[in-house]
Length: 277
Image (cartoon, rainbow, N blue to C red; front, side, top):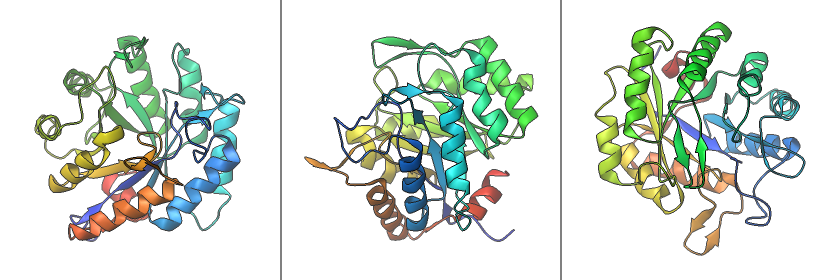
């Protein structure tokens, strides 16, 4: 393995669970759109794609058939080696098996592990019970899929360390700090520094800022030696008053900023080496 210390994993989250065509006509919703957008982002330099799907009415979904079609269409691009990272939380009130089946069957390199429950957007409970987290962690290990540990609040780090000690999670952990979601920690420099300083040595981590927190968190993550995530799941505005026309715009800007920091974007193969997948 070569020196990867100067490499930054650039993840693109093209779709998410909430933006609709009514909010922005540029968000990819159905599997063919998502696959083409992921491919375009890979060509622009993205290392990894975090994937959500929607139902036929564009609502958040964990429909296995939608995941299967999306992943199949991406993998059909034979030159595309982007790292795949599937969500396990595409909606509220879903049963365990619906959340587990996509990664269990499709075998992406990573899948999300939301390490605790929270009051999502101040209007509903995003539930990740202790029993589910144990089941999820054990099934991820059985499937050979690495968990991306989603951190919306500081207590979720301590949850992750508990499950690490219990053997439900295995070191080295990979964290994704999500800052700026209503009901979670705000997207401030101080909060990201605080979270980063709590994780064990040897872990890898990435960060994102929701909405207007997008760029401040991106710059802070790079300054702290972390990895970054961009895309319409987290932010639909390229600048104040200007909708992004595609996820590629976010990838290209992030790549430029990474270079301005004197760093390089990790290729998908380098990303696999960094994460051990």
